[in-house]
Amino acid sequence: MRILILGGDGYLGWPTAMSLAAKGHDVCAVDNYLRREMALETNSEALIPSPNLDDRAGIFEAVTGKKIRVVIGDCADYTLMSRVFGEFKPNAVIHYAEQPSAPYSMMGFTEARKTLNNNLNATFNVIWAVMKFAPDCHIIKLGTMGEYGTPNIDIEEGWIEIERNGRSDKFLYPRQAGSLYHTTKVLDTDLLWFYVRTHGVRVTDLMQGPVYGLSTPQADMDERLLPNFHYDDIFGTVVNRFLTQAVAGVPLTVYGKGGQTRGYLNLNDTLQCVELAMTNPAQAGQLRILNQFTELFSVNEIAGRVKAVGDRMGLNVRIESIQNPRKEKEEHYYNAKHSGLLELGLKPNYMTDDVVAGMLERIIKYRGMIDTKKIMPRVRWS
Image (tube, rainbow, N blue to C red):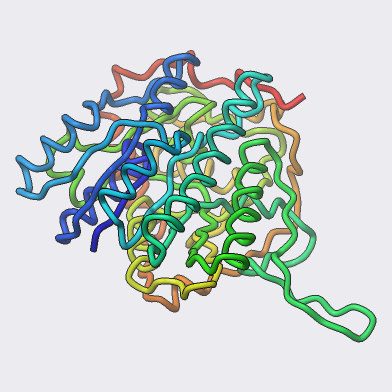
């Protein structure tokens, strides 16, 4: 298949590009280094220095003999998107090309506007480029479980049946995002649903939980192929942050009461989920929504797991509750359905003690590069 990966330099985009290219697909990765620029602007650089996308692709080809095409450009620029779609004619487009950080989106007006403009324009351009240049192309869009918020009822898989005054209908499950970043994801879903209804595009929207991990089969071939691993308060997900704090000897920073519960998954399961969605495409005129996670954990449970494994490795891990910089429920009901990807064949990699230990061992190799000034929260919701 011809697969276009937008945001191909990212934490998820680069491992996805390698994984699919290794399986013989014709892969083109597009990125404009926005995430790298924002990380530099906010002193939030990744733990492990990464070559640029062209160099990464060159290293990958030298190691595997497989080629990844690279385009450096902005997905929010429709002229660029028109050229890429017109020339490449993808069978599937995997859309990661969005500003990925909730804290960044809450820093101030400039960061909020950049998040809004980039995320919505990129999605809008993808839809129109597909309609004009590759009408049978399957759009695989990375959404987020954060779109749903933390309602006091079960979270269904994208849709909900509602009965009212003797009548019933099916609707998108109500969204109540907790940051501007997550709100742009809600707006993405609404845009996609509009164009599915009116123009018959085919879309899979993957509502993904926070991802953790460094290791993939391709990244393990050469350290220079490792994904961007952020451990700071702006771009680092909570598992990756806690792992790095444990190695650095910094107390694990639990925000507030620590009861915040979400669905998590291993980086390798993201690769599985995307491939399963791609090889089992949505139908024309269908918005298929799949909740993409494998396990539910509270922040306290994650901290406890990292501490238990870290202590056995001699890291003497401490946990510290700090004032929550975010505006969120710290104790809440959370029961999210997630059967769709399992039915397609997902074989989860669960967060066992061995998995946690393996991640800690990897990070220990880069202990001297950890900057502890990047760990404490620098952004407050209000």
